[in-house]
Image (cartoon, rainbow, N blue to C red; front, side, top):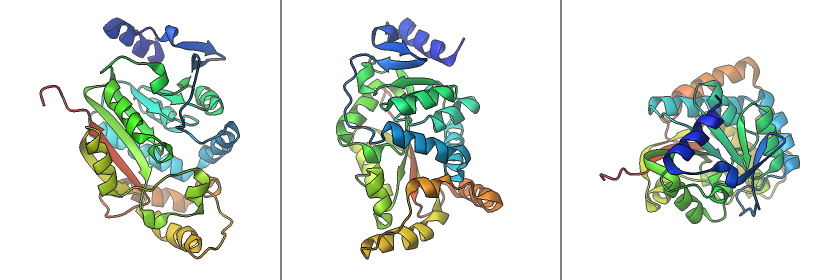
Length: 284
């Protein structure tokens, strides 16, 4: 039995939630019926195709996935993680390969199809559109998604609503406003976070922050001097997220990747932040 059936069967058994009443199955991609998408993802189908090429050999995506998996295992997470704004499913597939059941939810049909091709359960839609029961999910993940969301208040309220008491929310976001550049503008970011601003936002919406730390410390100097400073000087640098993230890194990339994984959460700065939070238990 697939993780899809196990999770959907659990929702039906424990909450009376019938996924088939909310979704249609087209070309192996589950789609929320009568889909009306809020602005959660700025990525078009064409951009998702470019991201697919970037993720095939990218050291950045590979290392980020390893850091996420390491953190989840350290926290003893169990259950299925619903990867919201999953894009092409690169993290969802890595989670499944590491033995962590995961379901991809992505507004873009292009991203959802690619995620299915990676062998993961893929839903084209949004968390809000699924109309899940209250307090039904063990975990929700958003990996470089929050910075794209126009109404983070409603989005985070929905995440909190569907999480079980004690359920986990794990997220990665771009960090340090100092690093803001044309790449953020092109990617459709609304902000880059700091530890303080991310903690404040999560706690304001009722989450208990368990851990919060920077990673990708070694990328800060090149991002500052190659992207951020030229941007502030009004210079146009011919660089993009996709070209930078596509690099495999070779042997040096593997070495840097091992360092980044070891340092993650233990450094005073980094170009990304990772947090694990949870919904307080009823006893609290």
